[in-house]
Image 1 (cartoon, helix red, strand yellow):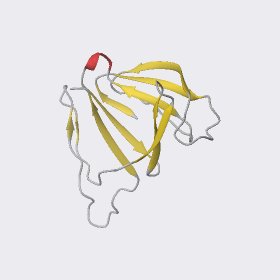
Image 2: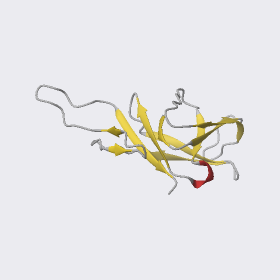
Image 3: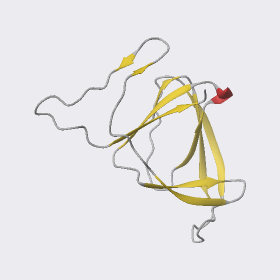
Image 4: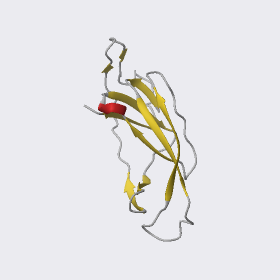
Length: 128
């Protein structure tokens, strides 16, 4: 993930149960960091648990790039020790983003002879 505009807080968690009971998950907070515009947070592994939020409800924009589609993942509720499976969805069209300082990241269609971009990209707007 790269923060394009604003600030995002990333909280890291660890799963402490054995993972053998469907719908049950005990997770514990480990650490947190605040990322500003231009900061990159790289993740890997099947049990990488984290939460991303905009501090102080301020607007922020992030771009998430996946090496392969994230078709399925778990959503965790640490207050009730629950988890449930969720399905990922992606847009196939890139758009134009303009941040507060006027920086532009234009999207374009493939040129003749070029292959469309492969992989999955998901962008999220945090806060309002």
